[in-house]
Image (cartoon, rainbow, N blue to C red; front, side, top):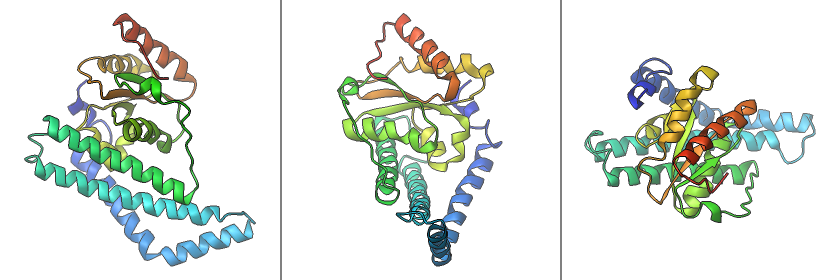
Length: 246
């Protein structure tokens, strides 16, 4: 299964899926800005009635609006890169790849910064040195799309590495992940057991062609974590690839 196939397995055709997802982002952002006074007032009332300290609903609403704005800027940035690189004809060049990695870095970093200033998200890095040399595999158990961007922020922004993600195909409903993700060496896979062999093949494919500035990010979920990571590392060991970060 190739990238072209990946690109049409969720939501029908690429054009249909992106027209829906991009339109949803735009409409949601416009509506949230227009009705912001009403929404923030309602959120404030909920916080007062529920006697929640710190205005959690107000801060969460602010985070949602900021995330929509960041998403729209990312979409516009992806469109600008499409024009700059000949309507997509030169996406394979190193310059284009570097530009898209920078856009991805801005997107993930902006989301994390917004989360820090609204919902008080704090991330503490104990020791990033195992992955500092790049060419590493990062296995991260996650429960939300927010968790998925953390490795890109910590290792991409902090250590100036280029992440190569293996993530579930349903994330293609996020326009920035969908558009930029298909221009970079990321892979979108199914979560069900029938697709495990394909997923493992893609995990192993990260061995080929990585530069020292690359790392592979794999984000399994739930009870399948042990099985998936074991298979991935078995293949890595068979090719003498030593995982440096977990």
